[in-house]
Length: 198
Image (cartoon, rainbow, N blue to C red; front, side):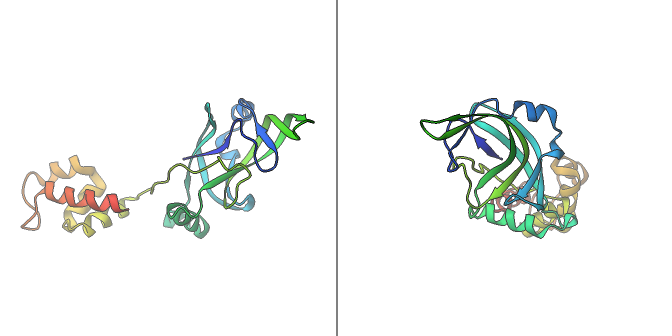
């Protein structure tokens, strides 16, 4: 989750984006048409945007990186690791200017309407307020099963919770103990601790 652009502040290119600049392009385009790139490189698609909208602050973006093994995108996995480590924390937009005004006194260009093409994860943004606010893992069933096992849950229990969720596993196991020592509640407490570490 992040802001691809913010309103009202002058960026390092002496541009200022005005509220409403993205409204037309967001109505006209479908989400897959607006790409998620790394460093504005059209050869480096690292994910997809799931939601783009304007709010009072700017262009709000929510997306997912292609980090599943089946998607085989090493750059996306690298980007995810760098974001988690806070080594990458900024976004930048690629666009065509539709309407703008230039202030001769200040040398600032006011961007009134933009045709948005892409939003990139970048090292150095033009707009230092366009930052990544949060990132989380998109866990697969295998990931959940692995975490439960690492937390000490017996294999059978881990598999049932990963596939059917807690309620489904509880129905299938009843209230009996698994593995001879831990109750279901104990297992879930341990699993919750492991989730917090991910």
